[in-house]
Image 1: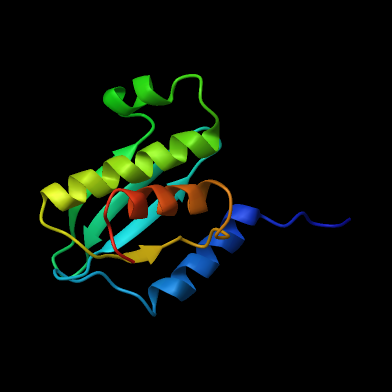
Image 2: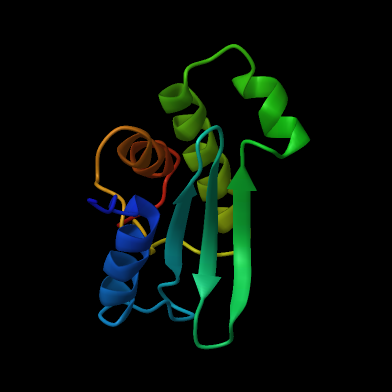
Length: 122
């Protein structure tokens, strides 16, 4: 009997491999993305202190009202803009993008483009 590959387990292995190479600092924190089936989450993290500086997701009420009736990619772009605005408010201009093992296409790319559009540099 053939065993089915666990895609999320494979993604986590890729994410750990990437995390060995990138790390967020106070000057340049890490913008981490998590993509579930229906929602997308983004956090700006300072790994030296272990602190989340800014975050946004489609589950936050203010964002959820904006993304209602839009496609998942449009919602991801809005989340990217919101996390960038929150990060800029907190004094962060540039970040390291952590795609967390996901392929840089679709919703992950839309979130990154939205964050760049709102003023984050990476």
